[in-house]
Length: 572
Image (cartoon, rainbow, N blue to C red):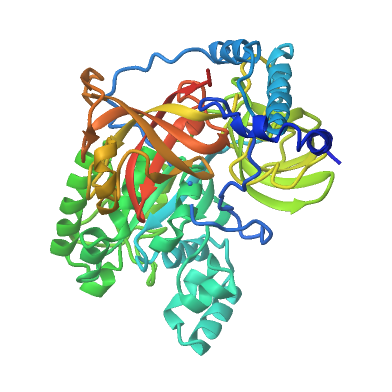
């Protein structure tokens, strides 16, 4: 039995002895508002992969800085946050239930010991036998835009999937009345996805082009599975936005509450800057140049002025017939590159052997008492077998016993997606989707609940307002107000949060403060706010780790805002 439970049992037995004598005094004690407590509630999370049936799939995971024009952030160093925690531990605790007090103090002491651990010099980078750059590429778009069919046909043309397999899919799809879904079944592997005809989870495969190694992520387009799309996008370096050129279908996805706009906003919010727009199903409109230009003009304005992309590239394709995928087609009005050539042109992120270790866990595959098999992307630092690590925010020590990725390297660095085995003593929920693997040292990640966030508000029906007591009666008429619950997405994490303070509004172009303590934040405004989550989470400032510092807020099935974490607010 863990030390947490032993402590709680001892305290409960001690309290029972004096229960009747001290009951009245005990009832008069009040919990301090700003004191952190340990809660045994289960955080919500959605796994990325398809092989984690034991992880409960709750609807949930993203994040954006604005158009790249904000003033630089002056965020305090991580060591200052550690000092704040040190000062807090020396402060006498306020009146509180003794069982909660001891558990909180025990966990806080663990964090202090981790932060006080001596700095371990970085290892010399080991040679890698890889000659091609790695690109994590995600394919997004409105439901029925033809994403899975497009990628399935591309994989077949590249001989990643053989003709015999495609012929089998065609026969099976025809028998089930879905003959046109044969190529989509290459990535839609589950029976439920094939029966419903929609992608529900992230499909993952990899292949090589002339000068790139590409990990392909096929994202769901249906609004019900937007959380899975966010999880996959948080791991992407580049994206392909697929739109349907069929008459009426593009308008449905772009103008009438479809997912085209939201996917584009989420891409930019999550740090994806390289975008190719594949205008698919042009064969249904006889490769009309007028239709292509109509869609291109509409999307160009939105992607550049509202979403923040600088140079989106457009390409006409057909996923069903396979035209302009791997070979250029003869069109009188288009003589540009095919889709494969554009995929080859994506710029791969540079390999980084320095920095702090941060691995966001996106999927939990196997759990036992002493071992856990998980997968995730190395967001910062490097990792290899036998490394001593900690899982945040549960502060669970572990050792990496096995580590594997898309390449047979002994050491994995920033940008690699890996599967690894953690060995240690694990309690239920101590390792889950949204956890982060770190190392000890002064710059380790300190979990928190309160954060200062700089954000940009998107299209919302009602402004985010500061509710006073006199307005509480009317709060039922507002879907967005301070104190309401929102969904916070960060890397693969999804958790409820509350806007606790509207600090000031700012000018998006230069970061200048416009108004202190605003009463509301409306569409298109940029502001600095304070948020609080239900329990401690593993995110940190954007300047410490970009991937863990991007956040996105959703409510009522819509993305309402995105931004970056400026700092973690430690309790007083």
